[in-house]
Length: 106
Image (cartoon, rainbow, N blue to C red; front, side, top):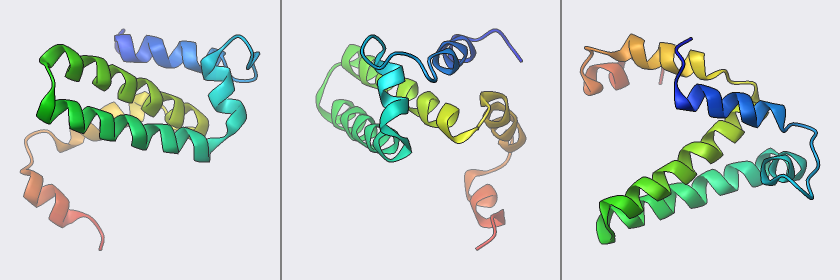
């Protein structure tokens, strides 16, 4: 696995599982469960989309960071390793998006 900021953040997020929800926002998300975590991913995705059409690049970057953080929390809660996502993205390199989407089981 490469030493990427998202990989490091994922390790920190993993370390917060079972932590004190009074002192850690990440631990609080884990304590509230996957439904709440998924809700936060959706909220942050919407906020990122809204920023993309009406705000500055800095605002888009900030909202994107929030979205990525919450997505990593969801992965950690779901047992998804970022390396598996990177592998899937690498597998798709050089393949037309239309071709890749059409190759998925219906």
